[in-house]
Amino acid sequence: MRSPRPLPLLVLAAAGLALAGCGGGGGRPRADLAASQTTTIGVNSYLWRAALETLSFAPVAQVDSSGGVIVTDWYANPAAPAERVKVTATILDRDLRADALRVAASRQVLQGGQWVEAPVAAATVQKLEEIILTRARDLRRNAIAG
Image 1 (cartoon, helix red, strand yellow):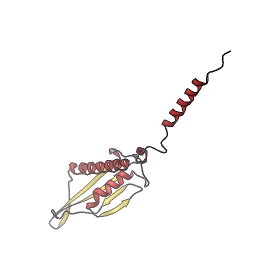
Image 2 (tube, helix red, strand yellow):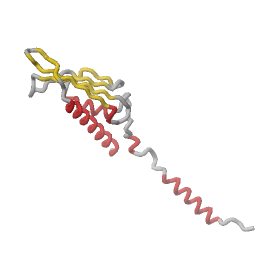
Image 3 (cartoon, helix red, strand yellow):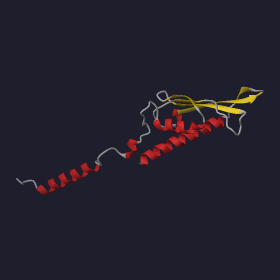
Image 4 (cartoon, one colour):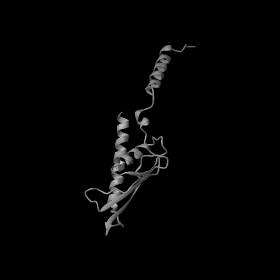
């Protein structure tokens, strides 16, 4: 009867150890640290921060971080004082996704000393959503990059 050769066993053991070391690295990948679902407030923190930054041009009337709602007070642009807007941003999910954000706006114009409701162009709301989503993606990208 032949005795087993130690060389093939050593090669197999060395290969096993080398492969086991491939999964190491001492921690989570950086992408996990900035996952799209990162949150400490009840909604996606990137969307939340991006919405706050984007709407910072207007005074804030109401903020609910656990419910994901930001409501601005009426804001009149100094260049157009006879017109004012009020914006509500709602973050609906913990994931960083386009459908996790809803923006609504109200617009009023000054007529005869009274504020009167006026239509808001759909493009205005879409542009605000686009700005918030782009900023949220940038915040996430920066968190991943370190």
